[in-house]
Image 1: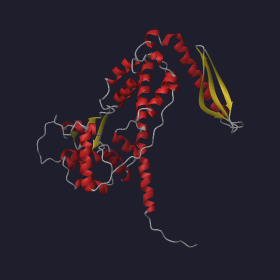
Image 2: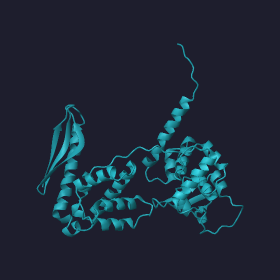
Image 3: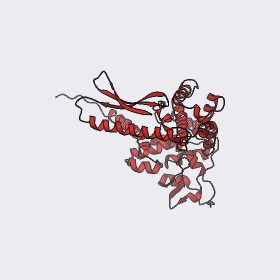
Image 4: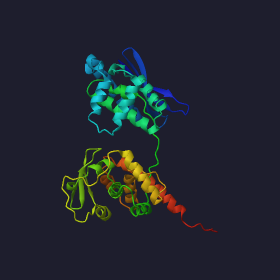
Length: 350
């Protein structure tokens, strides 16, 4: 086992740092995406960082060499391992789709010892080019494969290095739709043939709750005009103070409700819900794609355009990282641009 830190000269005069790794009779290269340039004062820091990466790789290879992955685990079935993981996930999660396409690809069992960088890269190509899946769906399915493999690496079935070296699929930037306040007002005054769906959707526009959370929301989850519940997706506890509009939606003429009773009676089939939303949007003259999650985007946009700070919004949405919330900042930038474009144009002579 040998690892050397090497440099490759580039046309622009800089040098790209990479690792020359020789192990088990095989040679491979890992480009670190670190660059040094003659006379650059940051060269020393970059070289130190490269040496740290080299040391980490040596530890990983040494661990593998000294029995961290035994032969029995290498011969274990990745398909069966994946199936066990999937059983612990929600039925609507992307793990199910990822497993389905994996089984279609291998057509048989797949052992951990058969998975290497080349296999993962070939599978990524298959997902992105041969399945007919949308770009972001391919991205999500491949990410789930790698997540399960990383979990398996922690249990000694495969090298984490093998998973890390495989390429990642590109993700397509999605234009997140949302409703303006005037759109919500139109919908609120328009009758729907599925009033419970209308009621739940508008409630989500003013609370940010996902469809899964609205479906499972019970009267006992509301106390002192605040919702306290555990999110279905992240399994984290969240509390959301209810606005006056959200409280008005919940008004039920003082009818007594049992604590364990669900507040909203939504159909289980999401297609049924989205079709009802589409009919309702059309009746209201809203020319936007109708889907339930649009309510969550709308809640985020309403908060930011009302000058509520992004940190508070992140807590209201139950995001585990503020980076997830920052995607909505682009919407606000667009609205600022629209506002400037709407200013009157005058001719200025100096």
